[in-house]
Image (cartoon, rainbow, N blue to C red; front, side):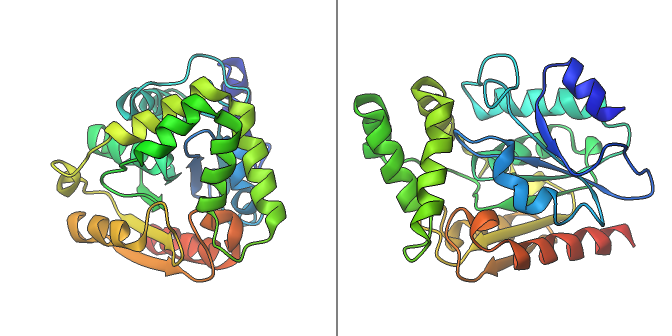
Amino acid sequence: MILQSLEKAGISFEAGFKHLDAKRPTLLMVHGAGGRAQVWRNQVYPLKSSLNTLAIDLPGHGNTTGNAGSTIGEYAKWLIKTLDAFFPQQPYVMGHSMGGAIVQEAAFLNPSLMKGIILVGTGPRLGVAPAFLEGLLENFESMVETIIGYAYAPDVDRRLINDGAALMKKSGAAVVYGDFMACNQFDMRDRITRITLPTLILCGEKDRMTPPSLSEKLKNAIPESRRDTIPFAGHMVMIENPKPLNKKVLDFILEVER
C-alpha cells in the first residue's frame, strides 16, 4: 500500500519489499546532494531480509516530481510531510551527507514521526569550499568529476568514481548547485542538542568531505547518541564498504527495538 501511494504522489524509490511486513522495522533512506535513491542499493537489498527497506528520491531528483529544494529546511518539511502521509508506523530514517542534514532538521522539527535516526557522512554544519560552488557554475561536468573523485577514498576502484560522476551529472547543473548551496547554508549547531531520538552516527575513516571530526561533533552534541567509523571508506561509505555499515545499522535498529 505504501509503495502504490508513493507512486501516485510522484515519489520515486528503490524498495526491498512489495508488501510492507508490519512485524519488521522499516528503514527509510535519504540520499545526498545531486544524488538519488539508487546510491542506497547496497543497503536496500542486502537488508531486506531483516527490515522493510526503502530509499526515496528527493523532489527534483531521480523521477520524483516537483522542484528541488533551495534550503535544507525545505527538504526537511517535504520529508516530514512524506512521513506523515505515507508511514503510519514510524520508520528509522537514515540520511547521507545532505540527506543527513535533512534528517537532522526533520528530527528536530517533528521527532514523533521517527523511531530513530542514522546520520551517515554528515555534520551539524556542512560548509562547501567556494571553489566547488564556483566550479559548478563555470564548468559543471569537470567540477562534478572533481567532487566525486574527492568523495571516494583515494585508492577506490576508478569505476565507482566514474559511475558516481555520471549519476550526479544526470541531476543537472541547477539541481546540483542548488543542493551544494543548501548544504553551505545549513547550520544546526544551535539546535542539535535538542534532538532526543535514538541516534547512530557513521562515517568513513577516509572521508575528506565530511571528515570524522564532524561525526564526533554530532556525537558530542546529540544526547546518548552512538558513533562509529567504517574502515577503508571515504565519503561514499555506503557504496565503498557496505557490509560493516549494514551490520552496524541493523544492530542499532534491533537494539532500539528490544
